[in-house]
Image (cartoon, rainbow, N blue to C red; front, side, top):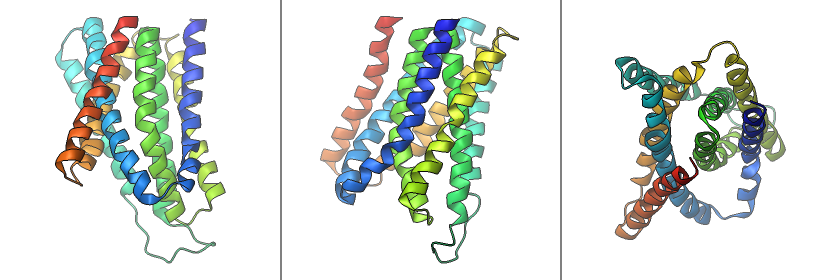
Length: 249
């Protein structure tokens, strides 16, 4: 159990520090950043789909069988992440941006991102409770998704009126909720041995929602045959990376 705690805490710390990646984008031109991001988004979509269907779903089925409860739990995960996304975007403000005023959507983004990261921590903790290789695969899938997301969140905070320093600080603080989520998952496992049976299906639904609803649509915004082929290759590579991790299970 000590090994599970060690791997989990290291993993969520890595996920939290990814939130600081926004500072790197300041030196990149917008066009170059967008070109890099679109292929990273393709790769992360493949990684999320791969982790959901190659690692998490087989483990969930092996643990509790392919039951209606599992189906409803996965659907529940999709709904939870749908609500979180709505929560992030529910409030808009049209006041001018000044040093004294920050847009409410930026504040809501911090809160919503904190909730999202908390769930990521729960998911990572529950994944390590299954076994270490599944935990590592899930951590990688979350990390691949977090890189473009955190770059986007940093941009939202800058656009919302925060200084670069404050944007990095608040983005990092919201990312630290992943540690809390992971600790809760591990502590809860001491009181119930079926914690992963509740959280893992939610993770599956969440990963499917993020990849299918948030990431894939981004790939259809700029259509050229060359870009589409590279996106498809990046998507397949993301899936293959998750498949390759089966060798360590």
